[in-house]
Image (cartoon, rainbow, N blue to C red; front, side, top):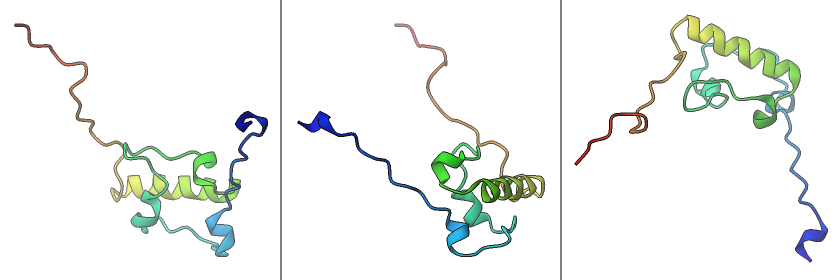
Length: 88
């Protein structure tokens, strides 16, 4: 019975269009961090829900902030994978 229907994904609306934002400031680091992964990569449009124009503006603002050293290009990854294994 549960397989009769497929769950429709919720439509994401562009936050910037909703608020009538005309300029995305590269100095607003808190806002830009929402659109980046924990590793420092820019999230895709299908994840952020931003329209094409605002996603382009977000990417440019993040890139400008990186050049100005307000945001990191990458974040060092600390994991135990891939290291030498201790033999006993």
